[in-house]
Image 1: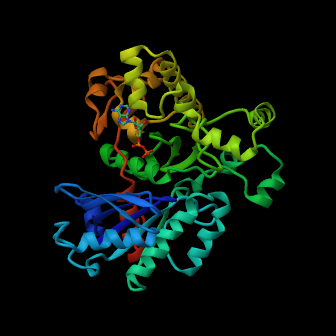
Image 2: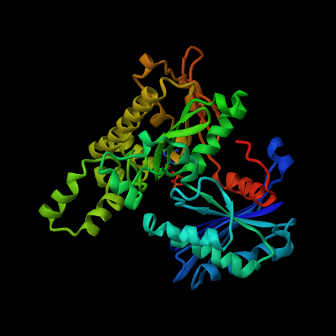
Length: 415
Ligand code: ADP
């Protein structure tokens, strides 16, 4: 089955076309036919599309909304210009899979989209006011352009974490607030944590129930997940993606009293404070330079920039604290898996995060660690390390494509 995977942001649309089938899932023989992104939807949009193995196509054009952007992509896909032999007409796309950010307590797994599901995603808008409306725009656009004959599925960032126990997801605030407003930890990046946990099982030959690991997603957004018997039992992001680790522009954990203090001291509104914590904090806020880890590492190395170094150190220390906390929570783990742009590419960050953890049984093999960059997958711990350490590139699109296939065929979930 050829699946169109869509990931819609407020003014962007990312896509991939992936061929997958139930027997292909076992063989890992899925094929990616094309990928691309359209940014700045609503004004002069930037378009970058690429068929696998072909030259990228870059263009700018005014695209009014997500429907216009998807229409543009679909026309390109079926045109001879794209050179995708497997897709000659829209009929060659058999299903559409959507990334949906928030499924709250309602969606604990991926589902085929019908009117009731759309209502459910709308009900979650309060919890993700920026993301869910954008995801819905993609769903409406695909419905309109493909018609009712092509099934669509929703895959939620939150659903992998639906197995967390109350003790992990409740905040210590009056319980009625949870009852009344569903204020609790939901966690995000679930598709990524789930995918790398599955790949870990494939690499090690473990069963789902034997999967006791920490998965560490370090990208622009960052989160750690504690996986027991294959299920998420705790994760560092909370009601929103602001909690937990230091991120590109998000603060992660802080004393909530800072909000009122800032409003008072800087004469800010709560909306302005929220923007500071989400958009001007993290690596960017600490360094005063950039949210980009690669650039910060360059600054530190080439110019010994003090604030770049400080930002990196605070970032690494926070990850380390979570590793310790979650290892305590799980009573030890078999492995730690790094993923995300930073986790996959930066041997230096992996080294700094795990340094000094030998007492927990974590030892990195320097050569192996240095070799793992640019999309390579494998083990980086030394032979004697009690807890194994892996680098596994994430592939959320592939998981969305496979979940979509499974939903559409009503097949059982195997990971
Ligand atoms: P997103 O969360 O937006 O998907 P990514 O997972 O692509 O982002 O991660 C982006 C981050 O990964 C950026 O901070 C970038 O600098 C960092 N990164 C990418 N390659 C490297 C590298 N070789 N060394 C250090 N950081 C890297």
